[in-house]
Length: 183
Image (cartoon, rainbow, N blue to C red; front, side, top):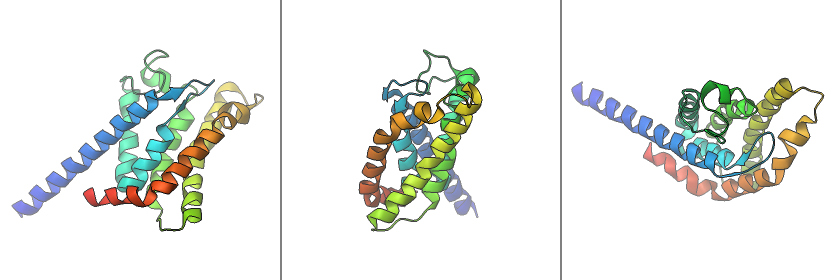
């Protein structure tokens, strides 16, 4: 009984450390950016996909949620923080919908099964990524008004970069999935 409890505790610690490292990786990817208005383009979507695929929907989503908690708590983990604010005031800005979309994307991309079919894997990853933009557009329209060109501001500027990230992760998917054995 004591051995089982020890194994369970060590597994919990291991999963927490993986989630913590994932949140750190998301923070680093948030700082790698190309400035756009109103939402900066970063490598975060790639990392969100990577976390979900490599560690599954539970651990990948835990890493994203931990990242959001860190940011809402005031740590300067978000893309334009601390220069554009920190904490909840930054969180409820133009990027909130995209950040919430990270949670659902990591969940879906981590839940889906992948194989050697490039086209199907590409479609699954594209579908998962579209959740980021779905929530992003919903919040952006609510925040700045639906009379504004929401797609021109919140989607179109990012399409080529997003396509590149989706293609890259699709090409690497078989190698990335092998990381699940560390869980």
